[in-house]
Length: 349
Image (cartoon, rainbow, N blue to C red):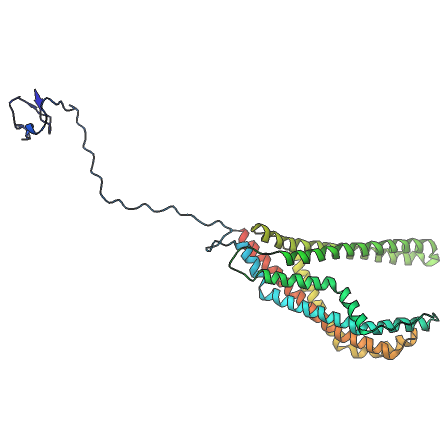
C-alpha cells in the first residue's frame, strides 16, 4: 500500500502514476507514509528585504547640533557680547582716569594738609611728596580695581573660542574674590560706624541738656537711615556675588543656571543714570565752585590758589571718570539681562 507523495491519494502497488493528480510515484521511495494531516506550505521569503530604519538618537537638551554644550556656549556669547566688552572698556578707562586723578591731586592734598596744620599753629616738619610717590600711592590704592579689570578681560578671552564647550573661570574667580573682600570691608566699616553712632546717641541722651529730646530724635532717625542703607548695600553685594556664582556654575557644570539677579541689573541701570547726571553737573558747573572755594579757604586759612587748582582738577577728571564709570554700569546691567534671558530660555527646553 502506498500513497501519492503529491496529493496523498491511496494507490495500488502497481500504480506508477497517481490517478488523481498524475504524479509519477516512482520518483519517490516506496512505502513512505506521508503525514495524513494537511500541512500548509510556508510562503516563500523574498530574496530582497528592505533595510529597517536605524534608531534615531537625539542630542540631550544641553547640547546643540554640533554636540557642544548650549549653556556654556551661551555664557561664552555673553562674555564676548558687545555690551560686556563695551562695559569692560569703559570700566578700564574709568579706572585709569581715577589713577590719574589720584596722582594729580595727591601732591595738592599733601600740601594742603601741612598748610592746614601750620595755620592751626601745629608745627610739623614738612616732607615733600614727589610724583613717583604719588604714582606708587595711587597704584597701590587702585589694586582691587586693577584686579577687577584683569578679571573682566580674562573672562572676555575665555569666551573667545566657540569651537569647544570648556570655559576658564579664572577671571570670574578674581572678580568674585575682590567682591567678597569688598563685602567684608563694607561690613567692617559699617560696624565701626554703627559703634560710633551708638556711642554718640548715648552721649547725646546723657549730656544733651534741654536740647537732648529733638537732638536724640534726629540722631535716632539718622541711625535708622544708616541701618537701612547698610541692609540695602548688603543685599546688593550679596546678589552681585550670586550673579557671578551663577556664571561660574554654568561653566563648571554645563547646566543652565537662573541665579543671575535682575535686581543687580536694575540697580546698575539706576546707578548709571544717576551717575551720568551727577558727572555732567560736576563737569559743567565746576566754574561756580570758585566763590565757594574762596570762602572756604578764607574760613579755614588755606592757600586759595592751591585749593582752587585742586577743586578744578578734581571736578574735571572726577566728572569724566564718573561719567565713563556710569556708562559702564549701564552696559553691565544689559549684560546681566542678556545672560539671564539666555539661561531662562535654556531652562524651559
